[in-house]
Length: 133
Image (cartoon, rainbow, N blue to C red; front, side, top):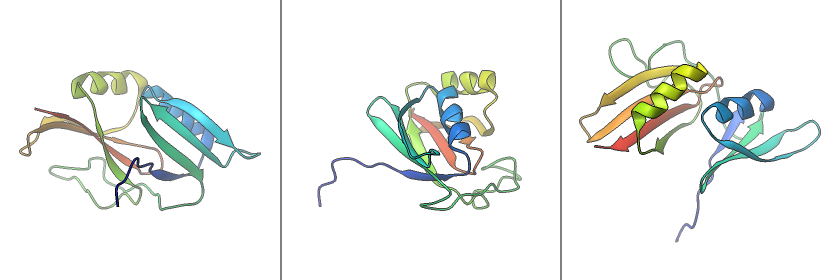
């Protein structure tokens, strides 16, 4: 098999809230479908993610406020985990602070040679925002 593209699908509880959350990160709504809207897509450059209202996968926030480190919990969130590769993790961190996006792991130089931070979507999906060191 030769894969040409990959599009994750996130189960979300509120389509409008999810579109708005991703727009705060700089993603754009690519399309929406249904009345009321039950499926849609967001895009950043060549990357896209589909959003599905109340279907196609799991979701759910864990109780821990951090996803790594002391007191952190990397398994209680029931949503999807994925890594977003960016040029500057610290710039994304500053943008998230301004936009009041939940940060569950501050920018840290990790032993696997990346600088990484974590964000949590309101439905428990965790995004590891990373750049190569």
